[in-house]
Length: 515
Image 1 (tube, one colour):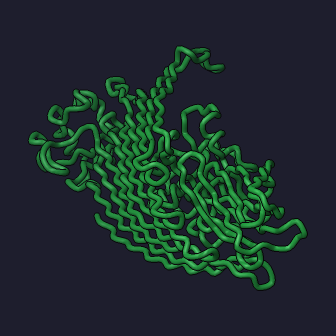
Image 2 (cartoon, rainbow, N blue to C red):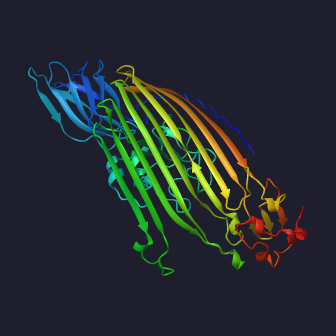
Image 3 (cartoon, one colour):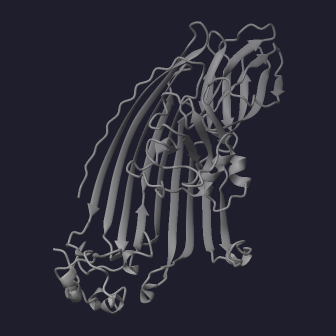
């Protein structure tokens, strides 16, 4: 079965508001520069230097003393300069999606004098009505996290709580949205509670922003919460990390009800490396994560010989590479590629009504490619263009299959199906493959004006294309439907080896099979 769908959406929003972030994945510094008498100072040079990468960003105040400076996330050293005035220095940390209002007062000076300003920006962002909060780099690196799923830290956001039935964040398209470096990572067709988005290693995420309500026009595509995450980037120092996270039932206490320790084992390894290619201009970052978790699926069949516990070890690999290139203080490029692959056991829906052969493996693979180019056109105008591609594939493979081809026959069972339906009991399973390709292209143009106060105008367009392909062997070789009569008393003798279809004897089912 194939299902082709293409979605092209063009969203054009013009927003008249107080200064807002030029693009949600980065930050903006804005403010006014005045002299000691309160008069505005035009022509002041505002230079922000990233302490770690050495990247510089420059803005000049306009005729009303206002400046607007889009920057990457990170720690900055600001320098405010104007001939005839004492230079002002200040340090500040910028978080994802944050707009910091920084007003400066400069004093006349005939000497080379420097004034250092200390203090923190206000905790409440008065430049936006968006309801949300930030998980900063310190929280990401220092807070202990059981399972190392970085999305669990969104519980730190005010008002956030876990849905005990379906988990913390539902990945259903249109209800919750996750963006990494501005690229959507949700799959459009997933709506089941166990649906998951392509994973990213915790050590690859620098920080993220949780938006709960009052989204602006640049967000879209979601009726629920939005998570904007930013991956780490390299700095001027070659640095890396390597760590492991291990859990074992040897460290667990007994369950209160059963009074025994439930078996559990989980091992995770993670490594990162980043540094400069050209100091202050070109930097690289790479990460790799691996997770291994043995599991046992226990069958509770009414037929004793079918109670074969399934032992399977799930494996998950995540990888990421990123390159940042600042051509000039006004122009920069970011390129990122990432990969995700997991393979785990997908047991039967109900072990009391399904044969062990109804189980199988489920594999998920999701490579992603992304690039963004931003350019500060003038002190008032900036443009950013982003493009990306995501491939997603899910493969369900039953344990018992025929040899040769996609959905082949077993020589001993030519003409029959691996799916055998009895009254209240099912033997075998189907194959299922799902593919999704997503292409995206987006452009955001932001400019400022001073009519009746300082405002921003943002104009943008976005194009999204989804290509879905479904490939099922849904009873594609027929089905033995023996549901009209009770299950034969000798059912265990008819299927002596649960995982070898060549030993199955389906002939006695012929009299009760519905054709």
